[in-house]
Length: 261
Image (cartoon, rainbow, N blue to C red; front, side, top):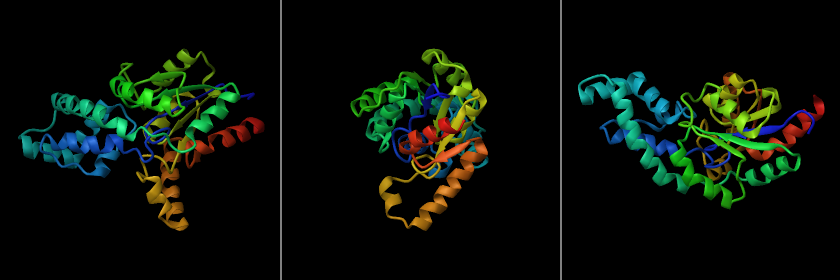
């Protein structure tokens, strides 16, 4: 390739865990442990952010904040954010292995990218302890990125660009415009935009839709198209320059872009 040097992927909803289910149920259960019934939609809302920030966003949302005050007698504080976070992380570690299956076509897409001498990086809203469970499972299926930057590796995560900057250093690639960021969440897209990279959204396999491949296969083409349009609009609003269904489509898109620049 003439114009691209590396691709930095997100994890859940992008390369693994089609529909991004692993963290969603754990957020709901973690809040339930504190007497709060959060909905799946509320759990999915801040997805892509570092998990502590995700919990903070949920706790400060009007309905959940009011519910916390009703149950606990006071508005949620940073101490409460930390309490929920300390429950969430070990729970997520326990279940993440059950959702570590690669998105169909991911391994083949990465192999094709490597054949063009592109380096493969990754950033995630997951903590390092969670990713220690995921990495060997992904590797056994044929996906092992050259670099991984987790949400707790740096003082600040998404939507800021620091995880991307660390990836540039670890991969030894520059300029930012020669690096492609691929993500299924708005904070992850913003991470790529803020880093100055070409940013590509993933619509069908991601958190916004939250559907399994089987669920999508059971729908009509019109229903799937409506869902695709909704997810694409949200990703483009977040800053995605292009949107694909899944990472399986990425190599063909990059080849076209590289030839057209």
